[in-house]
Image 1 (cartoon, rainbow, N blue to C red):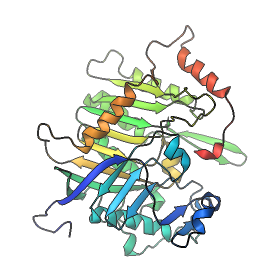
Image 2 (image 1 turned 180 degrees about the horizontal axis):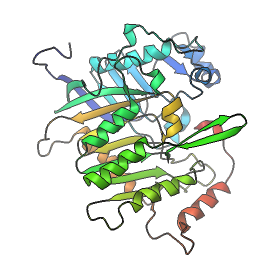
Image 3 (image 1 turned 90 degrees about the vertical axis):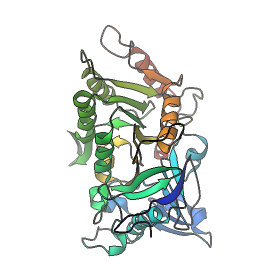
Image 4 (image 1 turned 135 degrees about the vertical axis):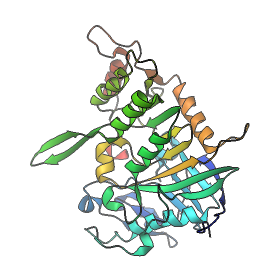
Length: 370
């Protein structure tokens, strides 16, 4: 047992940052994704009709090996994740309790393969074992930590399962000194088709969390966003609004950079910062979604929260330090462009607009590669 009702003993686990692996049971959104895998005698492939269930997509990227090792991260099971894009994920070894809980998420998906509706009553086998109020206490490497798995959208959260937004909120609320966020896209909007037109609404949850942390609690915020063909123009407006909050405020810091790789002009996916994580002074959140409203509202995704319990001994390197080092490497990269000092006389960001124009002039690529 990983936990008992009295005097629980932490479960010993090991964690490492990584990128890729290979499972045997596979869930896919489209039947065209894995024709070779389906013909393999040792592989069983199910497909989920996400269009019928939520009108979203299956963004979940995780693996469970022997029900004791797990991987959660941004990398998908495709060649782009292996060779083209920058990905980040975490592999947790020898942690059967966390693997069992993540396996329940997998079972939830597995039972949807032949359905075009979401059942109102689910088996207890998919009920969450751990959550934001009762996380799994473990010894991660040599540090005491608490971990749990979150999911989205809300309709995909069975009993006791923590929603991704609630997990992100807890990590941001627990931060005391800094919050570093690295995502492919940041857009606090909800957009959906309706009667031949597109309806767009402001989606405030994460935007409000960041504002509250920086302005009211004085937590330093850094936001690293990918700059690529699909960067929405309104992204610049929203992050400029975030930065303006700290104007003439002493104890307020919100910094924003855009990561754009232009070394291989004929391939827009090469070097794309496909990360989807957040690290604070005491916790890590690694998820599958871009921080875009429609992703959390309609698409299936999974997140992993790891929070350090106690103060870390001097010289001890935790998973928080590893993820922070990965973020700061990208933050200092020559491919990261700041909004500072790039405005022209019309208030537009000259360097970023130039990069945006250059990207749109490049060769077409497969829009289904996201």
